Length: 210
Image 1 (cartoon, rainbow, N blue to C red):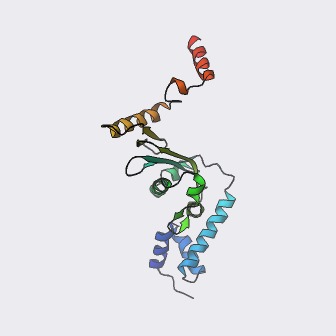
Image 2: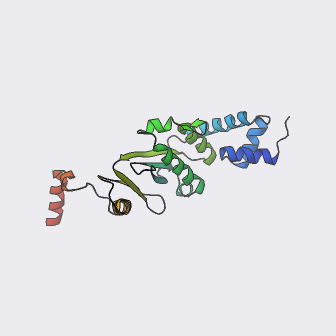
Image 3: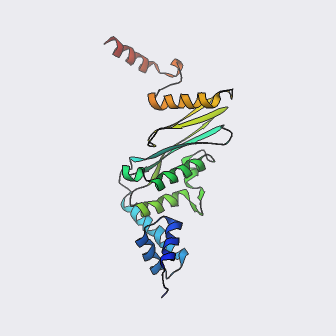
């Protein structure tokens, strides 16, 4: 039987993010084989994911990312079950990494199938479900393209917005960010009157009259 050292446990923990005891148990079961231990931890994640599939994941972190030349942006919400997990530094970092990766894809399905440090994003979410013990999933997925794109993430990572300008003009960076900030604050339903349907206009007029 292989001797499992604290260094081995810490190495597996660094690789997977799993808890110390879970890592130790997995290494003992795998007789010191790291690949087998990782597989054991992933299987645990699959079991936890199956058991929590009917849970609501209404908390989490919403992150926006913009590419280097500001012509494209992505927003994802990484959902979990509790606000405590949603505020966790490691959880937010994972959401940020996934938002950056999302810049390379147009659909959530393609993102979930994408490679993420040797496994797919979907497999990573299952793995993290086992590590954290809560249902972890990608909720919203949005992409935006334009002449100049900028983003705003409200404090607490609960709201994120993207704004695309029709031209990359002087001051575009500040202007787009300011508009994105106002959109996060006011939650507008359209860019202008032409984008508002007649029923909504009629309803608002009626409310104003009353």
